[in-house]
Image (cartoon, rainbow, N blue to C red; front, side, top):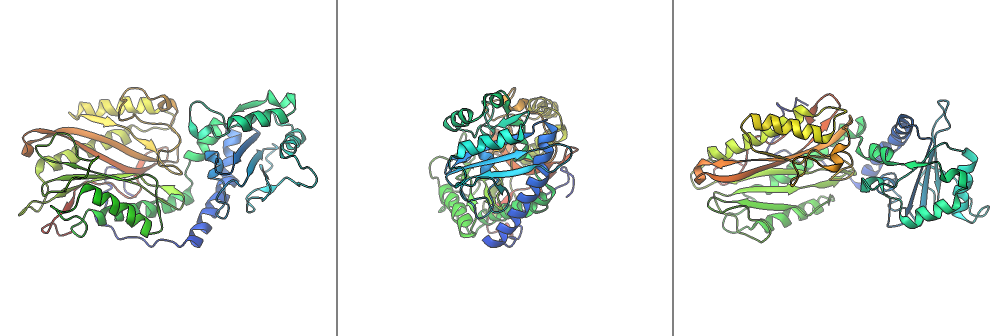
Length: 433
């Protein structure tokens, strides 16, 4: 992919072929096995933890456990307990599952119910047999992603463990966050295709075939997007929104249905789930007036300002820095260019608002608690932000130019996974779209 400052996304990309479920399962299971083989041992050794115990109950999955289930195990199945143990000496990390049904070969079954009917006692036996120095549990007040062990299951586990091992409990936070936030080369080899699907759907919706000025409402378009995703056999991880920015109308029109008119600027906020990974995109479109072939110069200038704020953020992203430090530098860089930025970027991957740090929030431009987490390499990000500036053609009306593009940070720099928007989607008979 080209560098971030050169990557331009096609406004009407062709739709990639969508894999059938069986082929998706094969891809995702291959990714999962590689992650379990390589990422878990690396994280445990980096943080000096020799045992990681994850407990989940059916329909109340730990967020980490939910991403460790293979393609034919959609739920944790009653109580499912995953145990990782590093015996040291360069030997492989053991992967054990303590439940009734096993876990598709990804973990070794470690419970014979006929020999030991009590699941908690079997877990205690496994711990005692291996005598770990540190036992990581997913309990955290800092992040829901590392807080998947419920109160009752924590109490039952503590009651089952021998007293000497209760004192060896440590937070599983660095393992849980590291597992969820890190993207592998195999995943990134297809993430561009996933984001391209989202971009193609957005392009379809922002077209005269779907939007009829004077007839179509913003809510009609929202539900068109939801239906299109469903028709493709994919999932939406949030209900999309389409807002209208209109000359002479303060703010935006979004919560209630409003008919789209010529001369409107539209913004969609849209995300899909495909191959277990999420997208999160905000694009803008302009509805051409009669005789127009492009958006007004003031709107195009606003989009360029938005791109400049994107550049300020991505140029300041450095491994080892906190999200809050990056926020401060990016804002300073943008303001020095005469821009009015609001920055609220976040990781993306297994979750739309993913595990890891944060670079600002829409309502907080100084300090975000989880923005104190330091950036690590190999993380996918949604570069989400806005630039606010006046539009001369609209009488100097202040307009928010919002965007969100998925990108990848390899520890050295940032690239957009499928390019970024640098020009408006144009809707109208003279647009050529």
